[in-house]
Every structure is written in C-alpha cells, then in structure tokens.
Image (cartoon, rainbow over all chains, first blue to last red; front, side):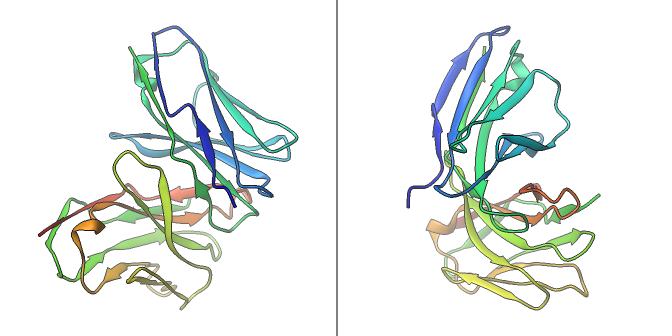
Length: 112
Length: 114
C-alpha cells in the first residue's frame, strides 16, 4: 500500500505570493490533517478534512485554507505569504478517529 | 484542553545505554497514545501506540506503557544505537474534537554517540 504522498518536497516563494501544497492520503483513508512544524512552535494543527468537509481548524489566520476532493486528496493554500510562514508542512491521513495517523515526508516552504 | 508534555531535550547517550523519554498527558476520556519519530529531513513515522490503559506498545526495541493512574506514556529502550538519533514526539488523539486530529508534545531530540 502506498504511503502518504506530498508534493512538492521543497518550495521557495517570495513574500506576498501564494502557494498550494498537495497531499494524497493512503488509499481508503478519508481523514486528512495538516500540520505546520517550526523550530520555535513545534507541531501545530492547521485543519482536518473528512469526506470533503472541514471538521476541525486550528488557530491560524484566514490566509491558510484547504480543501479535499472526492478522491480524498487534499490541498492547502497559503495566500499573501509572510516570512513567518516558512516551515515544514506535514500532511497526515487516518482511517477513523482515535487512531494513528500516517504522515507524508512534508513540504519544506521557504519564504524570502 | 488536552495537552502533552515531554521532557526537555536534547538527550545525549552513549551507544548501548538505556533510554527513557518521559511523557505525561492531560486528557478528557481515554485517548489513544502514540510515539512518533522524525529523522532529519523527514516526516513523522509512527513508532508505537497504545489504545487503552495498561496497554504496552512496542516496536524495534522501544516500549511504552499506557498508565492511566499517572497519566504517563514514557518511552524506553534497553540499548540505543547511533541510528536511533532522531526527534521523538509523544501524541494523543483529540477525543474532544472527535476528528483525526492529534495533539503533540514539543518533541525530544535524542543524540546517540558511538
């Protein structure tokens, strides 16, 4: 079974631009979560999608958004990039609540 | 709200030493508990899990027991190797939100020297 796939692995963007990250979950997993990882803040939850519906959202500004498609693939978008958005963005999929999540390798976003 | 607290790192050990990384949690109900490991430049890998009180999760020589009475889930390994050098995260499932969200500790860096 293929694991969670995130694309691209690395991105360099300029302040003010927008970016879209993609995540393909494990086949059969309908829950997809996104996390931001930085050295100072650790792992912070962004949002979770299940069957194309956002079920949960973390404490991030509206510039951070996401969506999920009918095949469970998910995208997250960050608009008007700021230097502080530089981070490793991790996607995770799971089969149900109260169970383990499987992570992709992440997308390293650098904002210059 | 629910939370996870891990011991501060970095933890530096010599090869073949005994490892303990402490993890305590605050939660409503009976969440599942996890240890994840992150190698440099990689995502998180599930190391082990426990789903109810007194369960022992184990994998690759690592063990952790779900202790409801002390709200702890300490990670142990009897003999560490250089290849175990990584960042270790303790996590719990967020039952309050009833979604796939996990709540993580801040991570503990382990460095094993030959």
